[in-house]
Length: 83
Image (cartoon, helix red, strand yellow):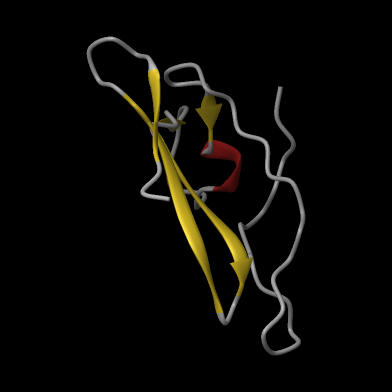
């Protein structure tokens, strides 16, 4: 299940302020159809698959990134954290 979103805006209009909205995205292959958001000359479904996420913890002045990526053969999710 996922929520429809028209963009993935991650920062507020105020300087140095991150948004805290939760973005949900389906994790199955070819599970998100973006055709409803495409230009009118595109017909048929436009499927996307999630294969990686980059998360930032901290403020805009500093922090730490952690990535989660899907292995292309095993389809298992792996975390990459250099902390």
